[in-house]
Length: 149
Image 1 (cartoon, one colour):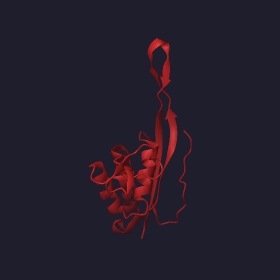
Image 2: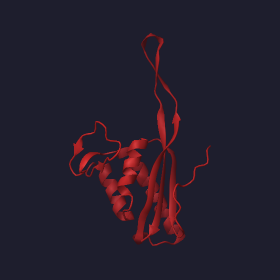
Image 3: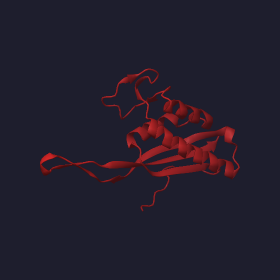
């Protein structure tokens, strides 16, 4: 396995968590991480839960080709439920790490949240007349760093 480190350096005391090789869309994960970056921990958790219930959209800034405008997103937006669920799991892991380190959970803020492409699981889809189409599954690495405000 390749050694994956954090892409940001934050001085201690801080809490970090990483989700490696998650089966979610890298593009959706990038937009979800961009949406929660800078939020307080409890606000980010409630935001992600609302995204999973399809009550609040995630604004898409970069990966928005052929994506419709959504009310409340300020332009192109969507409800990436699977990516929001995975990022929420990593966020709860970072919260548990913070409480283990003795940080005040009420004062935590997300100082770094990013998602990167992992490796791709190759696959193929059989077609007619003996042909095949590539059907690859991308994996995603998500990293979150929390710090007391």
